[in-house]
Amino acid sequence: MISRRLLLGAAAPLAAASIIRSAMAYPDRPIRMIVPFAAGGNTDILARLVAGPMAERLGRPIVIENRAGAGGSLGAELVARAPADGYTLLFGAGGPLTANPVLQANIPYDVERDFRAIGLVGILPMICQVTARLPVRSLTELIALMRQRDGALTVATPGSGSAAHLALELLMAGANVRATHVPYRGGSAMVADLISGTVDAGMVELPSALPLHQDGKAPIVAIATQARSPRLPGVQTFIEAGLPNFTAGSYGGVLAPAATPAEIIAKLHAALAAVLDEAATQSRINEVGAILSSPEQRSPDGFARFLSDELANARRAVRLAGLSPS
Image (cartoon, rainbow, N blue to C red; front, side):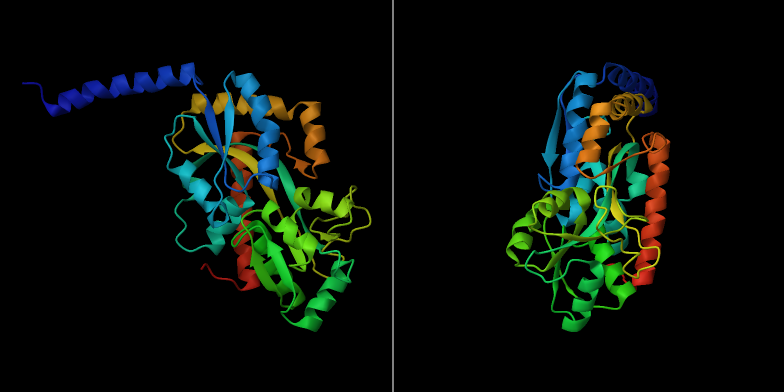
């Protein structure tokens, strides 16, 4: 009689051989790229900038699938639990990968354990903008109005637990002011209410805010970078408004489930790196208001280190703001 142990022992090399053959043939069908926010937002914009050109290099379509919910955690969990075969990818961002793990209790995945980094695409500076009806045009003036109205001003973000939510909490803690947080399901979802004046202000990444600022519909009053942006020379930084060392933002990058074979990760990284090396891609990333990732950040190891550093910074920020997971 053939024992179960012998059968399992014989099956192991066959399974390994099957995985190797699958990796060598990869990809042989369309790939899903999960964007954990609504269509039209910053993360979605960056994902679509690279998905099409990556698909051309891989020889198979990459289909963007928007799975919004729980500040991005719903889409991230979907990828963390997906088969590790390279056919379900995550276009991750600061909400599900940095803010949620420190702001949400019982998050259903571990960023460093459940994902394998492929490459960072770009960094999205955080800004603060106001409805055009609000009589302020700088963060200094907005802080003064927040202090005067003591919690009555409403500030929109793309969601509870998002990177923007964390930045808002840090702003209120650093300036010792209060406002009412109004979370939405993604950056694009808050646009109409910001234009109409239903909400007074918004914290969001620069790409979503730039067109509204340029059209005069929702002026940007501050940017969370070390120095003023060349694209917005008249907009003060949070630091200039009296918040020392205040920098904040989100980012966009490609990840796969943790057990994805190295050969597949290498193919995906090669395609992404080639796209990011193109002048046309770099120009488009700059046009939408993002900052192109460095060559090191575009590598799997470099992106993994970036994520680890971002998580450490978020944990420090949460302590400074006096927040606890909820």
